[in-house]
Image (cartoon, rainbow, N blue to C red; front, side, top):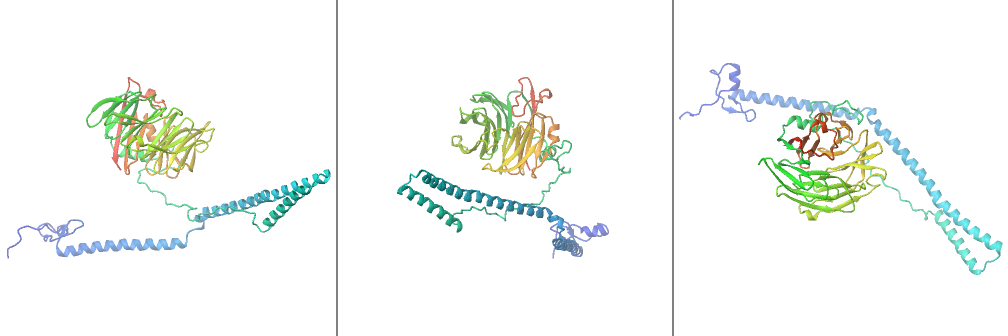
Length: 481
């Protein structure tokens, strides 16, 4: 029989134990490590893998024993918060029940006493004036019978109508394990008044890990907004478009009745949303067309944000509007509208708004007091965080986190998943005029940084407007996470 013409690789184990010349042919290849072994050493290789599997199994058995032991020896102090909560809830229920009893007495007993007093006054009046007749006596008799009937109903509890709330014990106590993030710095558990601790945020991780997909300088004309493929500048009735891959610049008209207040890139629409005092417009930068979605003469808009098919707007009266967006822009329609005191107290003012897939976020100011409030889509309050600084911009971040900007001090902060405010010194140190974040698409983050000359750094974030003679540096980060 003819011998095989293809020589086999040498056994790696034989080579390690002796030398390559004495090594046997490696006629068996391991599908895992892709190394070739002779028959004897392949058996030994499998034995090593089997021993490692046994070692892992022993670690598992040890962990299982620890879990079983832990379940029987959890220290009492672990349950102290639950016990404290139980005592507080029991006291609250007892106080509520006592209050209900007092209300019952005030409502029912006082009502019966009033009926009895009115009947007594009529009887005394007729007796003193001696001016009563059969019809008057029949009326008095009916009132007396009705009073006694009420007393009979009370004695049998037929008069009482109680509406006692039920308690959903299955969802009353919420528990979750802490999130673990792969970061290279420790997360500092700080409050809003902590100005020295650093928070290694998802934005900082993203900007340090990736390089800008686009870096450019643009003339200082109007408000700037960018997607992953193009950048637009809006100034009054004109929009200038920069297409990255073509390296081309062109302009088209925007029929706005006033200067723009905000530009927003919508990943869901694949369009730019423009807000001025009286209009919401959508700019199709590819087709170089700007369409008006909503025009109003009775209100003045202030802030806008969007998330996928939802667009939320605040007007000068602190009313909050939620619109359902459509690709056919004529079909946008209003879902909800809330006015004070639902949106905020009459004496308060909304200074910023944002939205993500779960919450509508509002920044609210009352004199020199500030707070950050999370609502669900029905605008029922879910969380309130008191701030020590103003908030002039809110942007949604991945994992239900929020980026807050204070234009008075040009500083950034993060509201994390634990509803704690963390300082964001990294973004603040970049000395940027604007940070635009888009994270509507799962696993994708688009960050646009606009930097302007240092002498104008104190200009307001929400009304940033570049000057004609200046050049602004724009960096665009567009990556799949």
